[in-house]
Image (cartoon, rainbow, N blue to C red; front, side, top):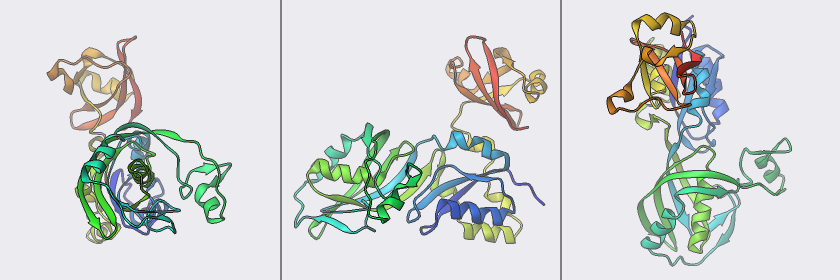
Length: 309
């Protein structure tokens, strides 16, 4: 039986939980060692990378990367879930804001902001999921947390009856609630608002166009081409700077030994940049990924963190 290894760039269909996706992938690839790189709400479709085999060791790196979303905000009413699936708790007869107002308000949210997790979320308080408490009619105090909005591009604004709809591309840190962002944006404009649509189009370096649905993967499996759906570990880590180990140092690197600077040629050397203290590098021996190494400026050595050989 094939022991798969790599990152499966899954396009999650709406209506499935992230746990459902992992469960189905385990059956498809006939293996247990599969982990996802960050949950995606059941009603949201989008990029959900799954790590197979030894690639599960890079989950911690992938899940920390920024996420990209295509979202739609409707200004004019609010719900208890902060999205269009909830019960309406506030509504106005008319929305009086301009396109310039919306764009200016969105710009003010770029950078580090504080968010309070919504009651309908998977955050745990005293061992209970918030959505479980919300379904029981219980509301509890939640601590706000700092998230980062790297970019908001408002792509279109239109009037929809008494409401206004704004489509936007958002690049943000992990743990950001786009529906809470929409609510807070509406509040900044002086009106109730909800997130009326959401799709995750990117997770770190993995984009929508690279993804495969479970149905498409099943067809590849029938044709004995399932391996074509996987990204090699090195490619999935392309956001980390690359270093190439000299031929004489490959064996010590494979053995997990520390490496001197002269044994590694960095891709950044063309720009004249020296190794950055504490930075992680993916080191290769020819076409083979050896592992992840951290540069220790005090010792002037590359120190192994994870080996993949």
